[in-house]
Amino acid sequence: MSLKKQEKHKKMSFKRFLNSIKYSVDGLVNAYQNEQSLWLHAMCTILIVILGFALQISFIQWAIIVIALVVVLAVELLNTAIEATVDLVTKEIHPLAKVAKDCGSAAAFVSSIMVFIICCFIFIPKIIALF
Image (cartoon, rainbow, N blue to C red):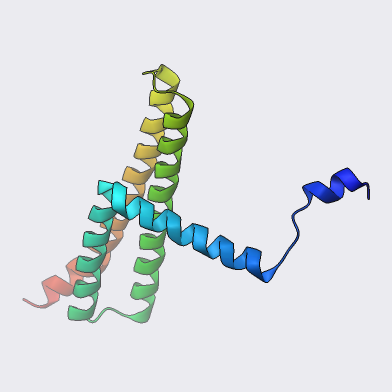
């Protein structure tokens, strides 16, 4: 392997692994400090967890809800990254910048609707059974 190829390959280390975790946490903290949609996601997550305990949902139902909530969080974070990247590249109102931001936002919206529908399937029958 040539020296040039070796320089491009990143050396693996425990310190690098810890730095990766730190950068991930920094990203989460920054997103929650600056993105209103992530606060809304957090509030809805708290409500869903309270409902889950109150209605004693099953392990499988918990698993489905947790996976769905993580998907929404991941899509919201990717949307935040898209918006930051577009803002870094251009401050102009450009049609392609709008498409990128709108599509990222639409992805977050669609994933949120998915969680809402999943929660309806899980919680509505349990709520009806209470009456």
